[in-house]
Image (cartoon, rainbow, N blue to C red; front, side):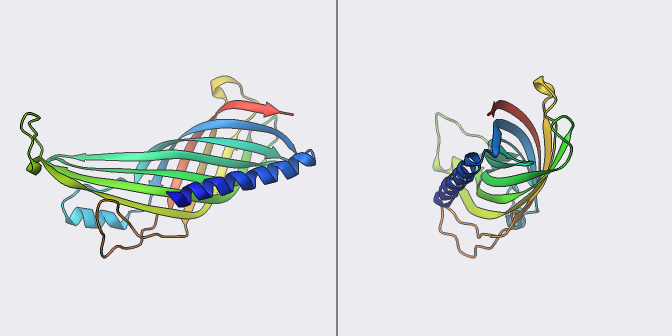
Length: 230
């Protein structure tokens, strides 16, 4: 988590430096704030086969998330910084469940390849992503009497976490001529995990840990909530 915070601080500092330099030349013309609703499709995680063999519920490959971001427009493109959360919940009978979530942060640059400010635009983007993953697997009694709780009712939980980073590629479909709630954009992208980190745990001393590939596809619906212009 500390590395994620360092990355966010470094990203903010770098972006402010770029904006300050561009602003001095009169290049930054406007900015906007937005939020997104998104879904992410991960590769089949290796940990899932181990959970399945142990009779425990897998981590879902499809997650639902939301994020908040800022765009700073420079010439025919814009710089973008974004952070959010995503999660999935798998429930099974017999008191077993898994909960998978992560916190992504990214710095991107998008350039317009088709369209103008008066017509629908298509942007191509590339950036760097940093994500903290966290998963919990629970096992407990399927029936618990609160007036007579025993240790056997609460069998325990396994916490797993990892931090990954990689390159993000994006394709953005946008239009600035629309107003109101029709002012929506759609982005499709792929995050290539370059780090492939090993699982760690805050609840147990792990042995035999292995690397995980957190590469994933993402689709987002984007809605501006505030705009500024010079």
